[in-house]
Length: 161
Image (cartoon, rainbow, N blue to C red):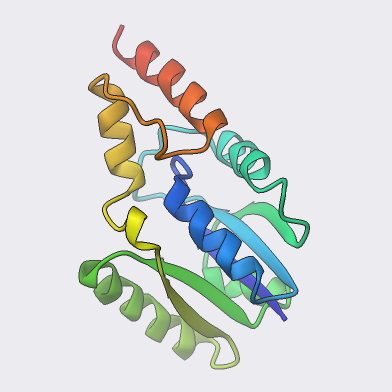
């Protein structure tokens, strides 16, 4: 079975990697798809996010990284994926993701959504929090893959000038 794990990944965190590694064990092929969200102003360009994810997922043979804009269901349909994976941290995530899953089901009832709880060590972690910590000069070691940390520090130094 082929699955899609969509997200903005701005930047990818170790919480995302946790979901990717666990989901990759459940499916034959997992496409981690960077969504271009017009409502959010991204710190990282789309290609940077794709490159960082490819680097962080290089140890997973059945994981492919791609990007898309538009509806997740359309992307899944185009790539013949019948499953969308969504990571959850808290009840607030569930409310939003449930609405999305129900709308996706309405748009294509042949595509299922599976929710995966992040591991307990990452329940507090979000891309927004990581960016905020970095901009305030705090360490993000252990929160993001190594390549992400380096680029995040470079970007935040540029923004502070």
